[in-house]
Every structure is written in structure tokens, then in C-alpha cells.
Image 1 (cartoon, one colour):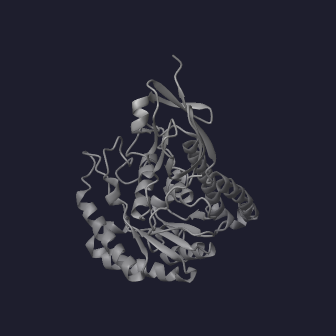
Image 2 (cartoon, helix red, strand yellow):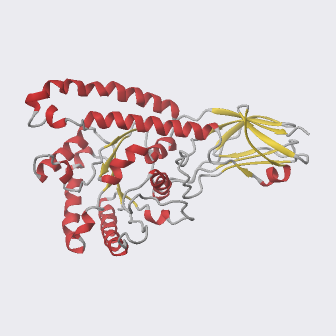
Image 3 (cartoon, helix red, strand yellow):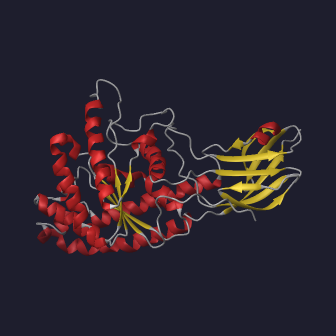
Length: 391
């Protein structure tokens, strides 16, 4: 069996048993609808049992303003703190600063104090902390406002967050520099502010890069006549046969989830390259688990053929993993933020409070989804065959 070469030391990693909590405003809350960030991190360490909970709240700030309900800012902050600590997180991924930056330079000291107060309040969790820089606004052209002036303020707040991370020995991750790679096939936001599905797909790749994680490269090279030992990267290869070429591959980790099916392809996906030298002239079709995937000429196979992003059982599995994560997040959202919460737990609970007993019944449903996710994150072996086209 051929083992892929070990990756370089990673700046960030999740450990077996980690409980990750996403915390922030709209950027975080909407991620649970699409699941690309969570899928990327779940699939990165498939042999480790890691759980994720999304506590994002649209319009929120470091002071918990959006969580106040009918109460005060202090009530919102108290609810934020209690929700986070109740989950006993070992990792916190926190994204604030986007809303607060509208206060400009004058509001920056207040924001810094608020961020430090938030981190102090969450200190009892003793969690490893990742602080995300706020995303720059996307320029979608006129008649929408020019985002340039506000992006300067966002940069100012990002710099302040980076300094907080340095002083507190937290991980700082800025996705913005990693969003400039290559042309965009479609906008990443629907209004300059809020990411689309394509936006979350692309920022998931940017998140991995910002955390210092290695690229998900997959490369296999074999010789059709067996004159050269096979080699592999990102996957384990065995049961290699020649003339015709046939082998079994089991990936080290799944590829990232494929891009959304909306025509958008904002940046190249992780390459999956198969090189087969020594083939006779002609065209050859790659079959994976008996299913035809792509066809190309012998000289092209010798140079290396990249699997199309939408092809292959590994990519299908990665998307099933993402869908299971989205379903789990939806169930958990109903668990901690029921639509009729005022009637269940608030000042009108005298009317329907008896129905609050239904809410804990979401717990076993979430647990079932966690079991499904645990199975889907594990790569499976697949059989690759390269067959000549019939003449």
C-alpha cells in the first residue's frame, strides 16, 4: 500500500473530542444554511470526533444586542454568555466587527473594550479561540454605494482584532486576502454584504488557507506497463494492476464540498490529478466503481488529467456530508431558537409554556444526524479503471 506523504505542520487543528462553537452575527448565522465552512473543517480530520454548534445571530454585536429580545443589552450579553458556556466549547470561532465598524474610528476603542469583555466572559470555557476578521464589502457597481470608504473602516477593525488576538495568544484568521485568487464567475454576495451559497463555498476555501491548512491535493501516477512504481498524494493506493490499468484508492480526507449548482465557479477546486504513462495510442475512459467519468487521449493521460469538479464518488460523498450538516444545524436551530420562544419561555409563557416540553425532543434528532455525519466524513475505498475505447 502506498501512503501519501505527511503534510507540513499545520498552524491550526481540531483534536479528537473537540466541541466547536461558531459565534458572531449574520455571517455566522447564515453559514448554517449552507454548511460549507463546517464541512471543510469536519472533513479535514475524518478520524477525529468533532462536533459543531452555530450560535450566530443576525445583527449581533460583541455586546449581544440582537440577543436581548424584549430586554436590555445586558440581558442580551448574559444570554450570549450562558448559551456559549452551557455548550462547554473547547474551540470558539468568533466573527464580530462587521456591524460595529459602522461606528467608524470613533467607535473603535469601545469595540476593543467590548471584544475583550466578551473574551473575558467566555474565559471559564478555557477554549482555544479563533478570531475572524470582518469580511470586506463586495463592490457590485453602481447604483449601489461605493464600499471603498466603509472597507477602510472594516480594515481598521480587522487590524484591531488582530492585535487583540496577538495579546491574548488567539488564532487570527483573515479571509480577505484569500478571496482575490482568480476571476469570479458570479458575485459572492447578494447585496455586497451577505454571502450567497457561492460566497460561502469560496470563503470555506479561504478559511482553510487563512488557518494555514494545506491544500487538498490528490495525485496518483501509475505506469500502464508497470515500468515505474506507482505514487500517490492525498490518497492511499493499493491493488494496482496494469494492462489495463486498475487500482483501489482510499482518500486521506474527502475533498471539499463541490460548488453550488448555480453556474458559479468562483475559484478552482482542489485538483484531483491522475497520470497514466505508457498507454498505447488511442482514447481511454476512466471508470470509478464501474461508472464512466471522463474520456481523454493517451498523451493527455500521460501529462495528467484533472477530474472535473462535479465528478466522482468522493465529491458526491462530500456533498452528502454537507447536506447532513445543514440538516443537523437546522434541527439544532429549532432547539435553541424556537420561533415561538416568547410563548414558550418568555413573558407570554403563561399561554403556551406547557409546550416547552417539546423542545428537548430535538436532542435525539440532532444526535442521529451527528452519527450520520460521523459516517459520512470517513473516506471510502473506490476502484479506478482506465479502459481503451472500443474501435
